[in-house]
Picture: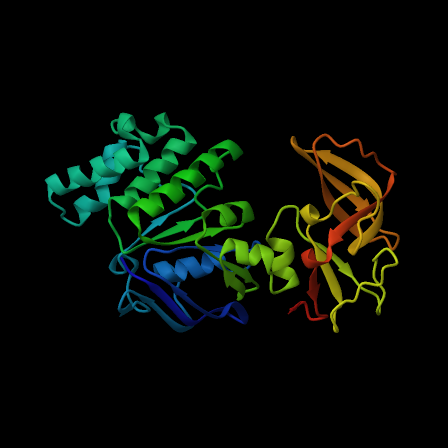
Amino acid sequence: MANIILNDVRKKYGSVDAIQGVSLDIADGELVVLVGPSGCGKSTLLRMIAGLESITGGTISIGDRVVNDLEPSERDIAMVFQNYALYPHMTVRQNLAYGLKNRNTPKDEIDRRIADAAKALEIEPFLDRKPRQLSGGQRQRVAMGRAIVREPAAYLFDEPLSNLDAKLRVQMRVEIKRLQRSLATTSVYVTHDQMEAMTLADRLVVLNAGRIEQVGTPIELYERPQTTFVATFIGSPSMNLLPLEGSSAWDGGRNLTMPAGTATLGVRPEDLHLPQLGAPENEFAIELTVLAVELVGAESFVHGILPNRQPITFRAPGRSTIAPDENLTVYAAFEKLHFFRQSGQRLE
């Protein structure tokens, strides 16, 4: 086991700065998730930790070693890819044993590690099958088992669930979190799926254009996003951002005071609500026209538009009777509002 320290890590492809001075300290046994949109640099950063990409500047340390110039095989890490990368002509047992045999691991030790990994992943019945005889979820478990038997200092996961259907992704998220807690091994996990990131991470690292936007626990990023980028990326549906024109705001005529310097008001769909018995006092009010209603089971998402054509979404409980073209007023408690500068940085 080991911590991973990135110090001013950079990567250039010609004139393109793919990674721009990333510094991050990942604690021993911690599961850190790198999340962000396509092209933000998260997979590049993971591959640099693995040694599959060279770095242009800075240092990467795993444990007490700077690994900049070490080959992947010398870094004591195990990587799980999205495409499984299993040998089709080998059985599950042979796939699990392959890397250990190449390291001249004693046979009894190989058998012990395979038995332990197979039990942890519940793939014992499949050890004598070949990959083509397994489902996608079973193949991903085998790919994880091949990493586990290595007993490395750190695990690296590169979007391992992206090829699975929605139901399997949920099951495997639970499995990965359970295993990581059980193994207590430092793990770095890359995904573009913010739901995956929120449910798995001890800490989230939100990347944007090769830079770190914010680092923190999932709840910290959800409740106190430091930029409009993080505010809209974390949470589903994303936070409503309402640009304020001058000093005016949609406050139902209550003239609630905005912090000086506010350029954009943020409010999450789940923090907006319809009045129960008359208009709530001392709450922010927003008038809108309904465009569409999405029923998603126990709740509905109502999509509307403000008088200035600004789109807005709010969550309504149960099977809502709200209809398109209906005019509504929704409210939010003032403490649920988020304020941002013109630059996109949070105002406290």
